[in-house]
Length: 160
Image 1 (tube, rainbow, N blue to C red):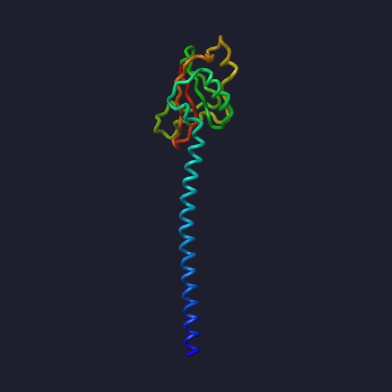
Image 2: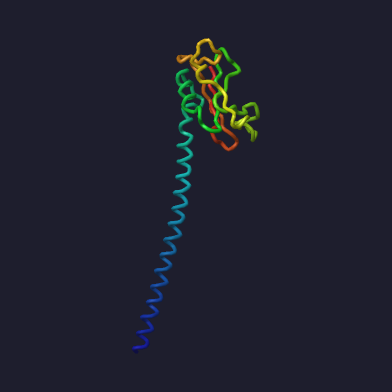
């Protein structure tokens, strides 16, 4: 009887140990899935936040002073360009990097930097009233965003 009792105790101990290990493994797997989901959500939020500073320029009408503020804000941003088309300069002037916007939007080259490392545009000309690049602070500009084939914002276009 003593051996049977000991055997039952050992079997119950082994059964409880296996049950405990199974519960831990199940919890670990579900925690891994929750972690992956949280990482994906965090990545999405991070992408949205990084692009949020550009949503104000997506198909909106802004003033000339907002254009010059955007020029100052983004002038040193890498792989980024801003095209300003004024009443005097319909072709426009690039600031920062010059982007390829002549290609088809579906093209892989659309929105890419034409001459990497070559910065263009002089911000002081936007305040010089005799210059073709003059940006009237009270003027109205239509703003749009330039995205590359990876859907990353590469530039802005302001057209008076």
